[in-house]
Length: 96
Image 1 (tube, rainbow, N blue to C red):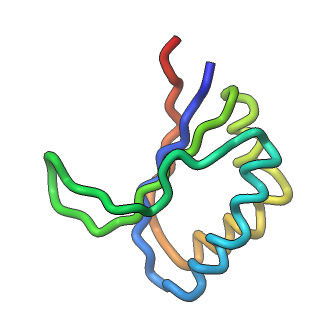
Image 2: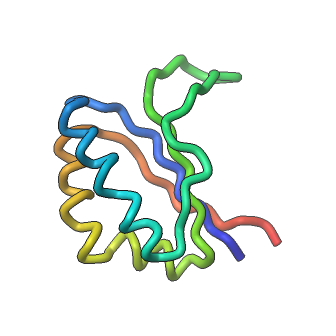
């Protein structure tokens, strides 16, 4: 069953974050993941307004998603993202 990583990120340093955007896709693909949404136009339907960047990633299994998150190739891009932004990342199981 697919699992999804939902990221809600407030960018603090746009220039540094651009480097993360360049580096992260290969690490995701290496674990069978792909972007379903990545920083495109969004609209708040309910709740407080936000200008955060939203991304949704899909992985084939929970194990593959966690393997990506903890992988050595993602370690440096993750640190770069953490230094340039703040936010939340949630792992959500899909439905059968």
